[in-house]
Length: 601
Image: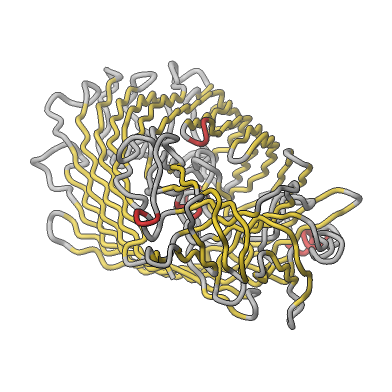
């Protein structure tokens, strides 16, 4: 078995020189900037700080708190906004529509140009009204103007004064003009609609947050035989708590622990003993800086390997990771394994990854990657026909995810060629997954449509010594979302297949009745590429006959509600599977229902 010691990895750790904090010289008095942050009643805790070109007007962007028609004003964060007869209202989505002061509602987002008449009193010249703002902006106040003062607080945290408001430039403030695109901060899981809330201590250096989750899953007739007992209900409780210690803008420590309890009730009314698990999901050190004139970040420990659609990985692995950045380009390399008690199919695996990425604009990227997985099980008895053999795939892949039309048009493309070893056979296979989605946010309830096709090659001749069945890495989740608030298994919430010897055609549509809710309706059609008696990693518990390729169709309904009572989220998934001719003619439909309630703190 190949091995590598942690002491050796520590010796390999690069000596990264820390760059200076953003203070004197970076944003001197008179510099025009835009600062986005959250107002806590005393400071604006800056999330992002950007240098801007000089302009005649000052700007304030944020959410309406309250309206006083009699006084001709409204409150937005720390500011009183005055309206007079010359104030011009415009609707952000309809150029021909205008608003009046009395129409404004708390929660609407406004972009205001104007000038100050007194301390924190702003006379509006132009106001653009957004009645259905992006949730990512919720709670943010954005100031665009000139730096009026520059100082540090008693704890050494840099402060910039803009519009008379002191803005704290903390260790997690994003400053795109720096060497790195973002400051040192933990990577939020891609499938989270929002990061967990957090409680901050020690001037923001220590933040603690977490979540409590309850899930009730009901699997009905997943053996496609109504007359045989096989239904089950899973009751799952889980809780996680996480802590981040930001040493400065370029170094932090992160840890996340999780407790989980699962109680499974089978159809024969025999309760399986609850399975309780306490685990350390993540615990790592992150550092970024310059080394030999290059911008490099370094990470070591148990960390989250995650990417947009979770097509090639979404897993907590133990390892080391380096990343180089230069403008829109980055190269990431890592070595990882899974210590402790991994699932049996992932035991004795080591992973080496190399990913090159180009980001031409925000939320748009193209990547090429190599993933080399080496599995070396000790003491395999090759005379035992039931022995668990090694699978060591080598992936060469590409990925393109992006947005156009102000985010109303989105696409996802993932593909890979894989070779290597599977048991006694060589691997030579290819897979691709493409999806496009379009939202019409000017229409009532902001409807959207999407469609996609996923295809993973199959093996025409299982006895020729070459396995042509495509397979994913084993770390994938195939989990994402389109324009809704809930992420879900986009290849089917019931079937949940791995993309192997499979063609999946998907069409769907959704609605956003409110900013914090969404409804998706999705139809999947499944066909094997080559007729086979095997389906690789699926929730269906019966094998096809191997004579026909039509596995069947699945209709899914996904409902998402977020920010219920501020910190609660609710997800509902319903899946209905109608088996096709690949199964016995007497095969019956299957159902899946899942309801999940989550509390974030």
